[in-house]
Image 1 (tube, each protein chain N blue to C red):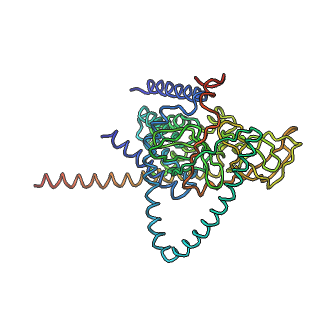
Image 2 (cartoon, each protein chain N blue to C red):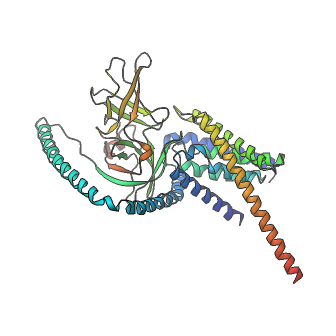
Image 3 (cartoon, chains in turn purple, cyan):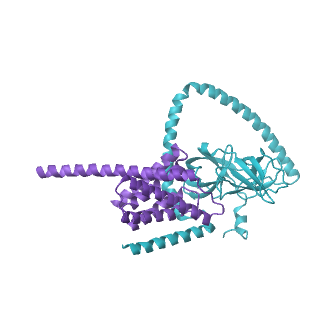
Amino acid sequence: MESLKLIATIALAALVHFIGVRLWPDFVRAVDVFLVVVALHGLRGNSLSGLLVGLLVGLLQDTLTSGPFGLFGFADTIIGYVTARLAQRLVIQRPTGVLALVSFAAVLQQAITVGLAFLLLPAPETPSPVWAVIRAGACGVLGMAIYIVAGRWRNSSETRRRGRMSRLRLG
Amino acid sequence: MDERRTGWVLIVVLVGQLVYLAIQGARAGETRLEEVGLRVLGPMAHGVASIPEELSGAREGVKLRGTLLEENRQLRREAADLRLRLLRLTDVEGELQRLGNAVRYPTPPAGRIRAVDIVYADHTSWLRTLILYTGPVEARHNQPVLSPDGLVGRVVHVAGSYAKVQLITDRAAGVGGMILRTRRQGVVRGGLGTGLELDYVPLQADVRPGDRVLTAGIDGVYPRGIPIGTVASVEPGGQLFHRINVAPAVDFGTLDQVYLLEYQAVPQTLKETSPSGKP
């Protein structure tokens, strides 16, 4: 069930990515939906699952770029692991904490990909610092929004479940 | 699994990926994983790309109904003009053929073009790419990709009906180019941003802003004479070469359909027997 949910989430992220690029050509520079999925998955605190999901999502993302295949796979593996380890050590319950964590993940991902590109490519291009900041902020905001919506949805479904249970007891 | 073991898994996965990245250089365009990814994501991108087209097509159909007649008249006029021009060019082509035959100059065969749809385009980020839907007929590795305005790039990966294109604006791309006015050759590479650079043109060479740059047909991938762009600025680079910035002929932001050129510069048999060719 968990795996199915994860596959559906990745498929949804890909769909949002494609629609975003279709509507706004700068979408790729401004937001990284795949990274948000990896970082939010890492928030669960399971570092093995975090790194494996990072690897899978990163390799999918590599399919959509012209750089060396594995660039994002490498970066997202680290992101998945690092966010999971941070989630184990820090108590992240407030949406602003999620904003900070996902923004940090976005900065880290860009640093890793640029560093690797300099190691592997003859004349790599560095992303514009302005777009790097926008991307980190946008990823953080998106991650926070998803965290809030998911939390509310979880709460409301919990309330509904409790209501059903109490009706069953009364009956 | 405890955290220590997970740490080891992380190290193994990262080292494995680094080795994979390192060996890729020699096997560019042959990654199996990339093919799987393209087969998974390609149909999704194709689905997303086709929906808005249908919607906008219907909307435009209603909006333009009143002007269709006028547009039709204009297109007929243009078609008549083009037919006349084609007649003249056919005449010129025949003459060139005769002259070529007289001096026994083998004219390279002109390739056929095939229109294909773009299903995913990222031309703004630093890892820019284009994914095409080629239909039942698969694209070929290294196949040139054109637009009506000029050269777009080449196919670097094929996965069934989908093909990934390396744009000429990519930093890793290189095209043999020449300046039309002087026939001076150089190598066109992706520059910073969305521009291009023409490298290896010596300081003695006459280059001016506004000069048109075409493919030179010397790189074994692109045929001669396809527009690449226009020289935007010329600066003294180092001690030997100019630093030439070229504005691409193609506006990559407006592309929604491109053409695959059925062209093979160097016959496959020749490539296979060459010392550097792969077996």
